[in-house]
Amino acid sequence: MHNTLRIATFNIHKGYTHFNARFSLHLQREMLRKLQADVIFLQEVQEMHTQHPERFIALSTSGQMEFLADAVWSDYAYGKNSVYPAGHHGNALLSKFPITHTNNQDISAHTSEQRGMLHTEINIPNWDLPLHTICVHLGLFAKWRRQQLLAVATYIEQHIPASSPLIIAGDFNDWGMRTGRSFAEQLGLKEVFEHHTGKPARSFPAWLPMLRLDRIYVRGFHVSHVDVHSGPQFVKISDHAILTATLTKI
Image (cartoon, rainbow, N blue to C red):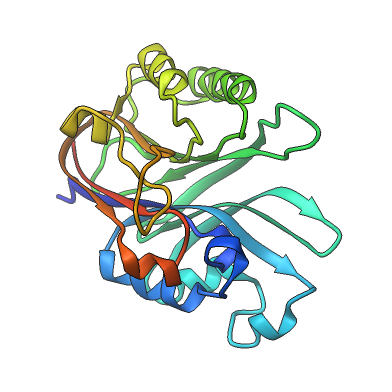
């Protein structure tokens, strides 16, 4: 019985390094493959951009998500959040197990910043209940983040049974950590790094992480291992570190 899951969360910055200095999607794909994760939560995935067609010659015509999934993750889902004349980007989820339901919910708190939460249900063999996942990328201002997490919490209470295994991961932009803690308390979640090490992981900037921006919250799991994938090599990969966790269903 497949009771143990390895998951990862990663803000890919539209396939570029910090300040858009270098196109690094190929290196990002290599790094993700090495992690051998079952489910990956991705933020800032660009599914269309007409200004850089030369960048996508080697990519799938359907964009960055399918290129990253390739032959490793058979199922994937995309939630379009930020739309602009040249294209759009949003959250994505890659899964080695069948995704049976997807819903992308607009949680924007201000017209200047388009944000969403991507909810999927995943059918894992021999589990009595589906796995629910929510991938988020929250706003830059604390007031907006509070509104957005309230929207996420309300959605969870209305649409996800309390008995179902649940993972919420992504870029919370919550360096003060207060908003996330009240969110976790409201829903009976544990943040995997806080549970394991006492504090959420430092994940930004990836080559020398100082700020605790990214999170993994779970309900219905034991946390057996957590890791931050960062270091000097990330100068060529992304401005966010990759967080991973190994979880065992309760």
